Amino acid sequence: MECVLLCVGKTDQAELKQLIELYQNRLKHYTKFSLVVIDDIKNSKNLSEKQQKEAEGRALEKQFKAGDRIILLDENGKSFSSVAFSDWINKQQISGVKRLVFIIGGPYGFSADIYARAQQKISLSSMTFSHQMVRLFFVEQLYRAHSILKNEPYHHR
Image 1: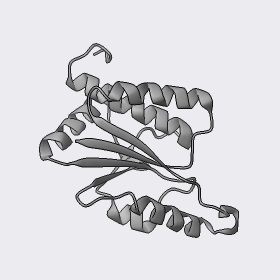
Image 2: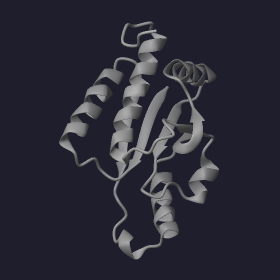
Image 3: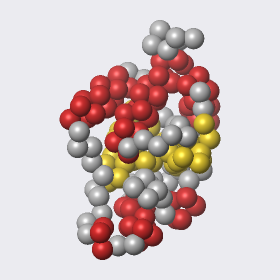
Image 4: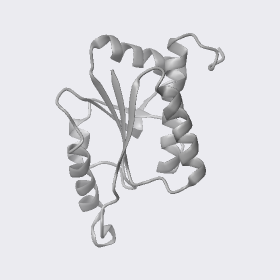
């Protein structure tokens, strides 16, 4: 199974980039993983919030393939413990899903079309984090989930 993390906008903090790359490299031992960055919408200051979400949604949809399972990282989504998330990942693998596509939206969230396409929403926390930090937290949790499934000592129970 392939895991894809789609993100709107680049990470401009070098320290965060390094940490994200650290966990991306660790993930290579467990699963095919890619982080795809969708460019920020040009002239977004001239767009309404709805127009910006719709433009981001169209850009995100270009990355979808038939059969993708779309999961939004959304503050109103389901919360998991790390162990429960690893169980969920395992169920996805067993179910035969070819690509799990996780999405971190832009500053205003997701368009109605993206919400309609998604099969699930997951919340990393009820707290608010910068989109750049969410990338790091998610990639680390994905790595942690795979290490839990392999009974490796990274996660202490």
